[in-house]
Image (cartoon, rainbow, N blue to C red):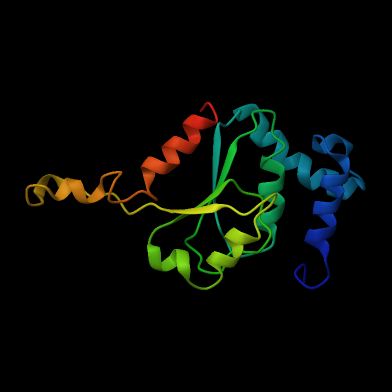
Length: 161
């Protein structure tokens, strides 16, 4: 069981020690794991990577690798799983609701994010507001919903994306 035997933490320590692309990671089996992900992701040159939190420690290996891509993408975790792993490498978390962002480990995951604590933004599901009463669109404005897509767009803009 990789959660109890320290395998994921060992792999993270090897990647951190290498400080570069996975080609310099040792031992060879760890290099192979990271290189297989890197070889797929690096050619895409992503500006942002959104990872669906599985709640498994392997989320840490994926997020740590993404921060080492040449494009230096913004890394965000979606919180469909209410039990995210502590110590994830991320720039911010996305939550489908305020409730999910405040229960079952989500606040702790945000505080323990690497390299420093991160903000959790609530991104409500899309709504076709054309059928709503007049003025309803104001309910989803930047002023009334500051931790929403507006804040996320601003963070991406500040990073030049």
